[in-house]
Length: 341
Image 1: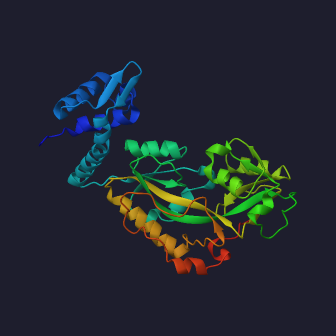
Image 2: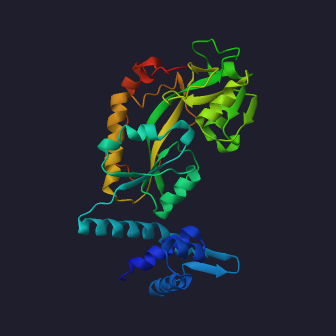
Image 3: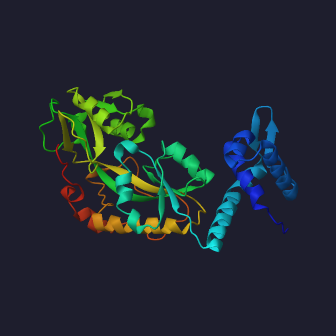
């Protein structure tokens, strides 16, 4: 059966399916709710099936709507790419980040000049960024990925960064040149938010038997580290290359013999055909090889989950560094000394 789909109708369907609320979807598209409802009704009439079940408590997708949503997203993305190609003006790749306490922009800054034209944003957290991806508001994202991820997204590991312990200068272990994670089991893990929402810190506490935890409010890195420094029993974890502010009474100590690694990944929507996605992935892979970003040895390192990629199309140039090379390098080769700490 040959049907000529109206892309405007398909775009309205995708946004309404993401919002599951016709009023909100209409506002994001800058049209009236009546216009949105008419376009969806025409699309349903063309397809000969209902895509939404409407009720007093809102709307939800029918089985046909659930089947239609993934290819509908691809149709909208392909239409946008076709328009950009026709007018000869490629729009920039819209990239967002999360995990701001750990400064994700410093990694993207190292590849941005080789990745084509980028438009950078500042997401709030992984759920808000995945929603923006699925809505088509952004093309890619960068941060720590952990399951479960919504269907329709894929990811590629970009960097494994060793993690240091930061603790008060009055901490009993502050003078140690290197620590094992299990030596911290009697200390208080200070977290910048509810621990059940901070997957990496939560898993670290479970794995290494950290018995005492406490939470703060994320008001920025300097404020957070000042809170760590003011109490002799507190510690937290910071990726080794994050530039730390000058905080009196703070010590940063490398962790070894199960060195925690913070996994940074590139995340994108399956079916996104933006050519800049391949360029960004290739630039990340090139820098990973140059800077030894993907070194991992399970006998000396700890990851909450194995370093694997998600399903979906892999952007070009996203291969891992050679495994023998990763295992041959020592801990000192993949971190720099912190200035002023």
